[in-house]
Length: 57
Image (cartoon, rainbow, N blue to C red):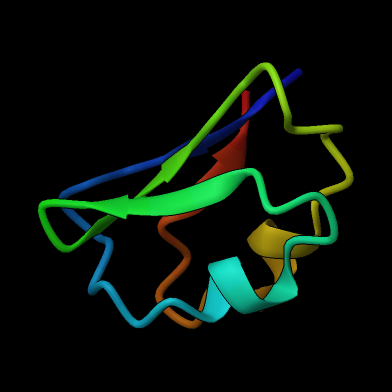
């Protein structure tokens, strides 16, 4: 499983960036992007996202 951002839902609030313990999330074109190589699939970003733009797939 991996955390995936739905760019249609992402508002660019950066809450996920602040919550990620591995700094696996960055911003590109005002949307969150998760680096699958760095992500440990902890799910913290999923729980933190206020618009439910991140899911585990």
